[in-house]
Amino acid sequence: MGGVTFLVKPASGLCDMRCRYCFYEDVAENRVQKSLGFMTLETAEALIQAGFAYAGPGGNVHFLFQGGEPTLAGLDFFRTFVRTARTLCPTGTTATFSIQTNGQRLCLEWADFFRVNGFLVGLSLDGTKTLHDRHRWDISGAGTWDKTVQSLALLSDAGVETNLLCVVTGDAAKAPRQVWDSLRKLGDHPLQFIPCLDPLDGPRGAMPWSLTPEAYGGFLKGIFDCWFSELSRGIYVSVRFFDDLLRLIAGMPPGSCASNGRCGGYLAVEADGSLYPCDFYVLDHWRIGNIRDMTVAGALASPVMKRFLAEGEKRPAACGACAYAPLCRGGCRRDFTDGQTGRENYFCPAYKAFFPYALPRLHTAARMLFRR
Image 1 (cartoon, one colour):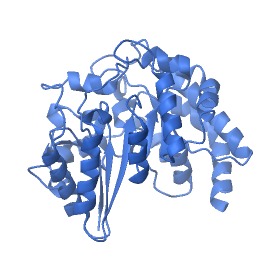
Image 2: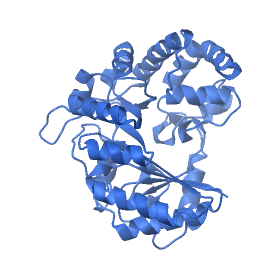
Image 3: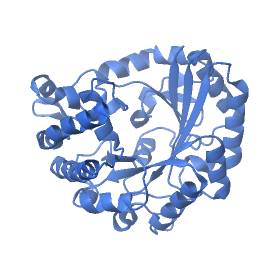
Image 4: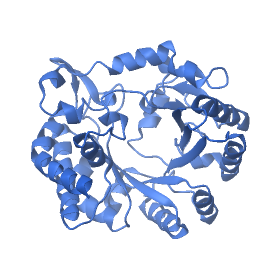
């Protein structure tokens, strides 16, 4: 019995939007072959079979579709994918599905498909209309907030489970209360706040949308105040980072690898079936192999994966003497930089500002929630 999560890119890095800060556009630009096209049904079936073979009886295979924009692969592709998974799924094994989308192509057919097949749908919405439309453009350069909000309403009306992902840019970090209020007005949805990434090969903090550690620390404190205020009134809003911290305080494993203190836990699958150890590192030198030619167990035990995991174990030296290390755990490897004292987490100052500010109330929240 086991489990595996695949981050599947059925349309590679292809997208119907032109977000200014898109990290996957930057990743693709750093590969010999920028786009790997659309996933074929043959590759999809090989992926499904490999997942079930690894999970075994009592196991689970989770397919999380992302991009680029995964809906560009077409609804027929997804219908066939899910139908194939249902057909091939062994007795006692389960298959679950989710998708991260910009929402631009969604319609009633998509919403019905997601509802019938139990998809969790993540929608990308950057806080407020002004902030969102400043960076998230369609191919003509127009903002996309209105269409994304329409898609959210469509999904909600259809009874589809949704969550909202907000990229925290430098602009957004200045307005945590406005971001919170705007997203909460859209309904009761779990929230994720993801720090905006700078280009792989560029200096941190140099882009118009860059998020500095100081700004991110202020944002975390502002969002936490909003979150705790609602909790004090008996309203629990799932915020992924705070969920992870509460679980750690309670002695439970966190839900994200960034809070786990080590890499691993899933495989990224490009459209041609190529496997990679992390969505942030879908680069030529981290290519493990192809799902059509190897097993999941073979991929997880491959020299490339072992090298990647070993690199991820090299936490910043400052973590060793840090009082907040049991909760921070060094953060995400993608945020590691080479500083004057060696490896550092770029956002370390943000966390050192946030934890003393929020920790007493986090412990209060943990007592409230886990006693309940």
